[in-house]
Image 1 (cartoon, rainbow, N blue to C red):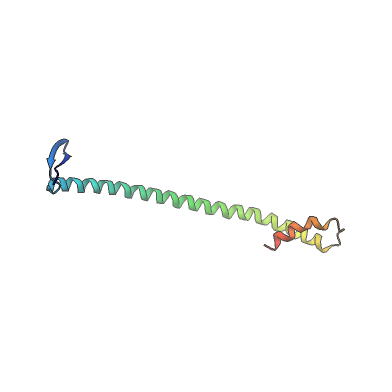
Image 2 (image 1 turned 180 degrees about the vertical axis):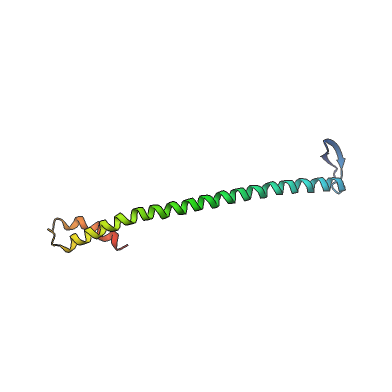
Length: 102
């Protein structure tokens, strides 16, 4: 086996990869890195949950704010269509008919 150079307590030590001190040092380092990554994942998860909640609330509000006036407009155009319209005016009601059928 090739000797491995590691820093243990800021002192350079030549050690074999099976040296218990080196194994403990590597394990402690991995545990610190793992804890740091777990904290980052938790923080990002919280941020994503908050942004998803904000997005949902925004979509609910904007949907309500758009749907109510549009329903009123579509109802008025529907009444216009039921009345006798000049042939030249009928094409102007066609987009609303298409929108209601979706």
